[in-house]
Every structure is written in C-alpha cells, then in structure tokens.
Figure (cartoon, rainbow, N blue to C red):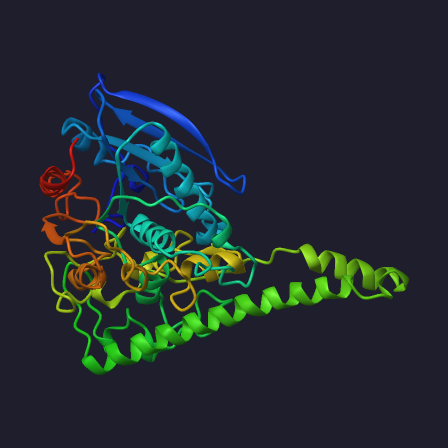
Length: 419
C-alpha cells in the first residue's frame, strides 16, 4: 500500500485550468496595522456579487471552486494572508485585519454583495471575522490568547453579506484536539509512548488500512480525555515560555538595571526578545481516521494525507509541528484559540451554507452538523456531496465530487444573490 494519499498534496486546493477569457487582477493588500497580503480578483463581465476565499496560511489564489463560480456569473477573490506558508507565526487575531482589508477593497470596487467562503481552515477564520465584525465596540476582543494587547475595537471590520462553510473543520485548535496523539509521554521525545493509549497498538483495536480498526467505547473515552490533557499540557508549556520572556522584560524596567553586571543585563535583554519555539510531535491520530464505525461516512480508512498514519504520525510533516507559543495559543490550541466555528457561529446571522464531503478523512458529518446547528442565521442550509476533503473521488486523484458540491453552491447563491 502507498504511503501518501495524493501525488502532490500542495496542488490539491488549486484548480487545474480556467477560461482564458476570465480577467485575473493581482492586488496587494495593506491591513490597518500594516500587515501585507495579496489576492487575485477573478471577473468576467461586471458582476455585482463576489465570493471570497482565504485561509490562515494556505494559498487560496487558485482555489478549485473559482472557475465554477466565475462561469456562473459571480466574481471570485482568492486572498492570501500575511502568514502565507508561515504556520509557526500565525496569530488569528491579526488575520481579521487582513480579511477586513480584502472586504474594504471589494466594497471600493463597487461590489454590492460580498460573501466569505471558508474552505478547511478558512471556515473558522471567516466565522471568527464575522463574529467580531458583528460585535459592536467596545465588546470586541482586546488581546490575543497569549495576553498580547490587540484591541479589535479600534479597527473597522466591514460587515459581509453571506457565509459559506465548504469542507471546513471546527477550527485548527478543535481539529488538532481530535488528531493529536495522547500516548506521547514526553513532548520533547517523538518516540515516547504509553502503550495503553497508543492508537496504533493492535491490543487497543488498531487494524492496518484498508481494514477498519475497532476501538472500544472505553478506549475512545480515555483517549479523548487524554488528548485534552495533552493540549492543556502544551498550553502550559507555551504560557511558561511567554512568562519567562515577560519576566525578562520586567527586569529591564528596574531602577538599578543599568548598574547591574553585564552578564545580568545581557541575560535580561536577550531573554526579553528571544522567541522560543515549540515542536509538537505526532498530530495525525484521530480515531475516526481508522475506525470507520465512529462518525460513519463514505470515507475509507486512513488519514487526510496518508494510508499509513502509523508511520506518517511520526514524520516531520504534520499539523502544528513547529510553533511559537503565541501561534500555538491563537491557532492550534483547542482550549485557547478564538478561531472556534461553533463558538462564533452564534453571531453569524447572514445567509449561510454548510457543505461537507461525505468521504472526508478530516471533517466528519457530526462536525458539519455541529456548525449548521450553531449558526444563528434563520436562512441556513446543510448540504453534502460525494468525495474526500478536496472533492476527489474517495481513493482516487480525480476531482469528481467537487463539481457536485459546487452545483449546490451555485444553486444556493442564485436563489439569494444576483451575479
């Protein structure tokens, strides 16, 4: 059996081709705090409605949904954030200003309706934005989960007209909470393991794909609790590192600092600016990937990227592998991150569509249902289509499911928004 699910996972989100008649305008975006981003605006004619795509750090400028939307008469905007391909520094609170810069540009261009389509990690980013934009000052957030001052009340967050959640998880923190391997006993040792919690231990119910594993309810309960415990432990590590830096900075303000020995002054100065990194090992271990009876769907056994997660769980590639403490707390902590779709959905009142793929190995039917139930909009719809996370046919590299999903998206749009 092959190790990787896709020949080139970096191209999975991109379209293969687009009509050469479509106008592609590449723009640079400057957020209100000076953050730099970019985007590509796709138009054919003079559409009144534009659908936006953005992810915290993945390239959305060639999203596979764009050709279908433009063919249907809509404009599409594929935006890239300031943290493009920079997961280790990604702080979600800053990203809201990037979203705002994109919305502001599109309003200036004269679009009457602007919709946000969040795919994968973009779903939680856009839900976070809508929730904060719908919150009147001074009720918005004033700091990041790391405790850094960042007052969203002082920035303009223009409202939008609709929300689409396309194969999107509940938030990076929430998906990692489900995927992180709790059998790690030493966060500095990628090989440390508690056999009683090892998801790949046959004694616990693991079976090699394509066979489905079978975990007992008791094991699943212990496993989920241990995952939460590990995330809390990593939160503690992140906050301890930040506290060390804060303590060093406090030393700089002491009246006698300038008279202290050079070694003490150097230690405090260096400690005040040091950026310690966290390495988060083994993050490809959601039990639902292996036991097809958990949250049943049309998926096959295996992880989002691999048919051998018992091996790829130990490799250098993986979600949240290298993080600053700030990025961990803001993006990947299921206990601390504000980018939580369900928590933010209570403030989403614009027309909303949730679409999931029935063979997805990362976003499951219960996830989509949770998002749909939490959205406060009176006009909301839940839909599904065959295919894996990227709209490929399950077990193939042919995008046969995405066209069916996009047909439903276009039909939903046409009932509500003039192209």
